[in-house]
Image (cartoon, rainbow, N blue to C red; front, side, top):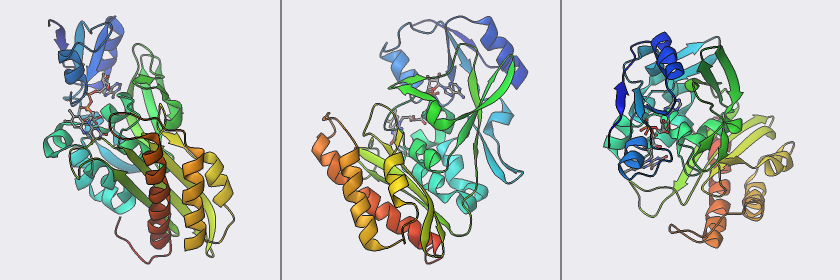
Length: 292
Ligand SMILES: Cc1cc2nc3c(=O)[nH]c(=O)nc-3n(C[C@H](O)[C@H](O)[C@H](O)COP(=O)(O)OP(=O)(O)OC[C@H]3O[C@@H](n4cnc5c(N)ncnc54)[C@H](O)[C@@H]3O)c2cc1C
């Protein structure tokens, strides 16, 4: 396998490099890309690889004007160790901590997790639950796109040639809010999710003021359960309601059978995940648990 290798040192050089190439792949951690290249799973095979690891801006996590900005080349390990993420978006640190193994988390990045566009990506439900948007950069500038609009199918994103994800923007979890990430795999570690999900919830005087429920591994792309969210808003938070929400979630999703498990089993897992996730987010929102 032969390909040209580029490692631009700053954003402008990256943009210039991308716009000068026809058939290339961006290389972040390489934990998806290099496996696919080695197995010749890409059509066409990239003739150039553009390594973004030497661009410091893409590895930063910052709080600006009340939002958290995460560089796309921030590794999963860095997410789990960032004070800002742990204190203000613990649900994302929890999701990142459940990706692969220590080696995969050290190399794999949040941007790579998004752009690989796997329906099972672990950080994506957490980011969807946090209502993340992504900054897409190209020679003409930067634009912001809701994360949910990035996914066009398994392995497919909205990115056009010359474009890359530079940063991810999320709003910190506030007082009266809580968020939880849960994952079921076939093993306790180094397992792709049979089902994963993240739930964010906002309370006002014990009533659900707003809620976001995001799932992975139950559809061709990660999804939000908008219908269930709408059903929950305005109802007093309580255990029985959350049990009903779990049952509704199982009815709403349309998963498939695959090598990891059956569609029916996925529905059972979704029921459990929604119940447990809502309970955990509720406890946090009420200040009873600050464990995320
Ligand atoms: C053994 C193993 C276990 C794994 N376990 C898990 C797991 O439990 N959970 C999970 O979610 N994933 C898992 N993965 C998948 C993978 O590790 C993650 O998806 C990881 O986050 C990918 O990030 P990366 O930086 O390595 O991406 P890369 O492999 O570098 O890139 C992935 C894709 O995204 C593109 N890309 C990367 N960054 C950008 C950018 N900024 N802009 C535009 N395009 C970009 C690349 O061109 C490529 O198409 C596993 C992989 C392996 C090999």
